[in-house]
Structures are given as structure tokens and as C-alpha cells.
Amino acid sequence: MRFFALSVALSSVAVLMSPAAAFAQVPTMPAPAIGSTLTLADAIAVAKRSNPGFQTQLTTRRVADLTARTANAAFLPSINSSFNGSYRAGGQTVVNGITQGASSSTLSSGGSISAGLNLSAAQFSDRKASLKEKDIAETSIAAGEQSLRQQVTNQYIQVLQAQATAALQDTLLVTSAAQLNLAKAKLQVGTGIQLDVQQAEVADGRQRVAALQAHNSVDIEKIRLFALLGVAPVLSTQLQELTSTELPTMTLEQILATARKSNPTLETNRARVEQASYRVTSARRAYIPSFGINTSIGGNALRPTDPDIGINSQKASVPLRIASCQRSEEVRLKLGLDNAYAACSNIAFTAADEAALRDSYSGFPFNFTKNPLGFSVGLSLPIFNQFQREAGVQNAVIQRSNAENTVRQQEIQLTTDISIAWMQLTTSRQTVAQNELNVRTARLALTLSDQRYQLGLISLVDRITASNAFDQAESARISSIYDFQRAFAALEAAVGQPLR
Image (cartoon, rainbow, N blue to C red; front, top):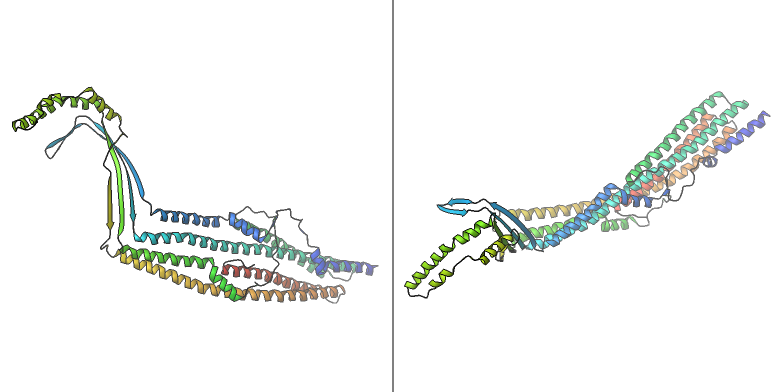
């Protein structure tokens, strides 16, 4: 009877301890609802829409558009307007012995509109340099997008690896629980010892801690992923597994050629070289004269604070005007010239004159008396400006040389990074294959140790040793798989575009 009970217990535990059964006993998450699964492509798309750093980088496109608009507007005339007003208290002022001023306080206003256009040969190359900002902005955004893609991919892989590790720990937890049950069963039927039970309890306790920490790591890595995406974390979201461990279809030479042609960072540096060349041309064109044309139109309005003072002054000046006219005509009469002495008595300040004067005051402050329209055209060429033009040319040439050196350095670095990334990728692929072989061997050894332990041919310590060997092999396999994915992402980042 005792033998029958022991056989049943051993059979049950053996089933639980087999690797396939152990994986089957792992607690599974309920099927995710629609929209609760996140793919890598979806994660990258969300990051492009919501990552604050990338959104900030996108504003460089708007800045470049404004720069281009300003560069084109440099060939249009500038238009300015002005308006002013003033008050002068009544009173007399002596200037160089001459009394000036008015008895009444006066208000005055004035306005003008001016337009001007200044052109130089340097403006044409400056415009081309400014328009290059759009190309630089676009390639910089593409480089930022690729950098964001790599960050999201690496963190996505980190979550997947944490999930795979947690699943492995769950599997080992089932195995350790099965070992504990087996040890207790053997002790019950008298074929085991208490020491084996205690060792199994310690191993099971350690495995429970490892599983708890592994699941906590999954949540932590998910929070980091969602922070990178720029959205609130949803820990229930499931990530789609990256199963492919195939190498790119292109050869290393083809990958290098693609990167030299379309790497965003390299394209940005090349655009800066072109921009620097335009700056050199602009600096050299400072020796060519610049042309300018300007025009303006404006006027003024005046009104005394007390219009009656001006009107009374005009009335009081009538006798003086008549006397002045008569003296002038008397001189002409004595000289035998035609004169209009009789007409002098017709001088008067009529009601119509008074009405016209009052009407002119009523137009203040916007009914201006217009000033004559004027134009000015000129050419300007600095003859000597403390060697500023020469220094400007040399600085522009140095900037272009630096930009060219940056491109050459980037090309060398690009070749180096891609070559290293390719070597790491191929090595990672070989490591995955070897670790898969190691896992198969360790699983076979674990199965054999299960059978020998059930037959009492080995101790529980030997069984735990075989289980640990399988744990290490499976952990190495998981790490190698995701190391391969990281190496692939590193190669894509070096190339500057996706390769799958």
C-alpha cells in the first residue's frame, strides 16, 4: 500500500517537474482586449506624436520656414510710418538778439510714410544660405526621429526581456514547488529525509523572491517605456514579441553604401558645408557696391489753443499790410513804373477769411499740410573698414573648412560604427544558436536527473544542481535573443534608417 502511494506521488511530481509541463503550469494573463497590445511600430508612432523632446525638435521646421521667409523678404522694400504731436506754450524767445515766438500756445502734429529698398550682391548668396536652413532642419529632424526610434526600440526590448525573464522565473517556481512536494511525499512514505524537505523549502523560497522581483522589473521597465513615449503608463498593456533573429538581407558593403547616401546626420553636415560655401560667397561680395533707393511723404498740422487770438492778430495786421503796400507802390510811382496804389486800400480780413482760418484749425490733428514728395538714390562702397571685410572672408572660409572636416570625420565614424555593429550582430546571431543548443542539452540533463531522482539514484542536491544549470542556460538564451535585437537596433541607428 505504501509502495502504491509512493508510486502515485512520484508519478504526479514527475509530470509537474518535466520542462514541458512546467511551462504549461505558468500562470497566464487573460487575453488582452482590442487595443491593449502594443507593437514596436505602434510604440514608435506614439513616441513621434507625444515625446516632448521630439516635439520640441519639430519646431525647428517652423523656425527654418520663418528664416526662409525673411530671406526672401529682403528683396522687398521696407515701409515705415510715424506720427507725432507737440505742444508749445505762448511767449517770446530771444535767439541771437531776434525775438521769436507767438503770443498764443499752439498744438502741432505731423506724420510721414517712408519706403526704402537696399540691395547688395551679398544678399543673393545670403538668401541661399538662409534657405539651406530648411534642409538642415529636415535632416536634423530625421536624425532626431532615428535617435528616438533607437531609444524606444531599446526600451521596448528591455520590457520584452524582463517579461521573458519573469516567465522563466514563474516556470522555475512551478518546478521548485514540485520539488518541495516530492520531497514531502518521499518523507511521508519513509524513503526521504527531513534535510531534503528543508533544502527544497529554501530553494522554493528563493525562487518565489526571484519571481516577485522579476515581475516588479517588468512593471518598472514598462513605466520607463511609457515615459519615453510621452504618455501615461498602462501596466496592463501587452507588448508584441520580436521573434525574428534573421540577419539583414543586404551585405555589409550595401549597408555602408546606403548609410553614406542617406544617413540623416551625415546629410545635415553636408548641408552645413553648402551653407558655409554660400557664406564665403557673401563675405567676398562685400567688395561690391550696394544700392539703395528711398522715398517719403508726410505733412504737418497746427492749431493755436485759442483760435480767436490768431484771428484778432490777422485783423490787427490789416492796417500794417495796407501801409506796407502803399509804401511799395509809392516807390514804383516815383520810378514811373506801373503800380497798383489804389488797390492797396482793398486789403482786408473778411468774414470769409476768418471762416477759412477757423476751418483750417478744425482739421487738427490729421488734416495735414503735405510736404513735397522726395526720392533719393545712392551707391555705397566701404573703402576701408578696419579690415572687417577681410576678417569676414577668412572667418567664412574657416567655417567652411571646419564643416568639411566634420563631414569627413562623420564618414569615417559612420564606417567604423556600422562595421562594429555588423560584427556584433553576426556574433549575437551565432551566440543565439549556441545558447539554443545549450538549452536543449540542459533540458535533456534535467529530464534525466528527474528520472534518476525519482528512482533514488541521486540526491536532491544533484537534482537542484541540474535545475540550476537549466536555469542558467535558459537565462543565457533569453539574454542572447534580446542582445541580438539590441545589436540590430544599434546597426539601424548607425545606418540612420530601418533595415527590416
